[in-house]
Image 1 (cartoon, rainbow, N blue to C red):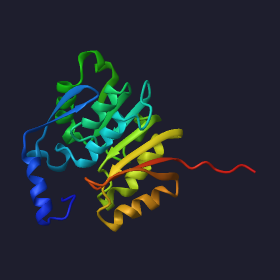
Image 2: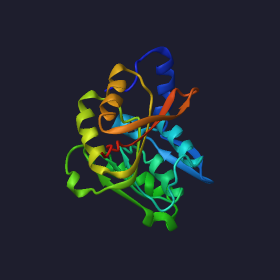
Image 3: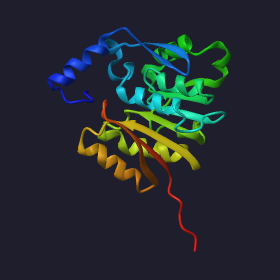
Image 4: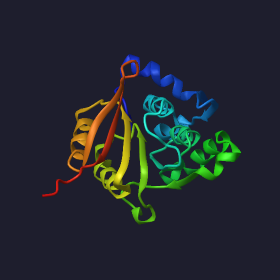
Length: 215
């Protein structure tokens, strides 16, 4: 299940995913993220969209202090860890098969004094949503790529949102279907591009529930 087209440039870029770990510095903390491409594939490597979203959070793109935050498709947990370092109370989520790997990265990188700010929970989009309530901020890095998941992803976003929730989606727009998902979102949310990293070809979109006009 490929996220990217396999040209020569891509194949060269994929080599870094075979590294067992990769290191970043955010919020004055060194974060060493384990990767496991061989066993868990796309869920267990750090994608450029995650790095760009972390930079946006670190730069204060949205106020996270004391906010409730959920990350969808958290993968390695990098984005959620950075959000916690920025003062948020974070729930990182992914499929069941990624739970132990995700918990391990969170445990190894989150300072002890911040452990109370972060929880790891399984979430298959569109299923068991009654176990989750609204969040102030929803984060997603490179989660727009499989067309068959779009309905459940949108259902999940709608469920997790209050009228004041901010959604931040970091992504590459690789295919027409990616644009199609943003069009689907615009039926329910106002969606605006807030940044574009031209070096990594990554966009960040901000979405909020569309406010209905009152007459």
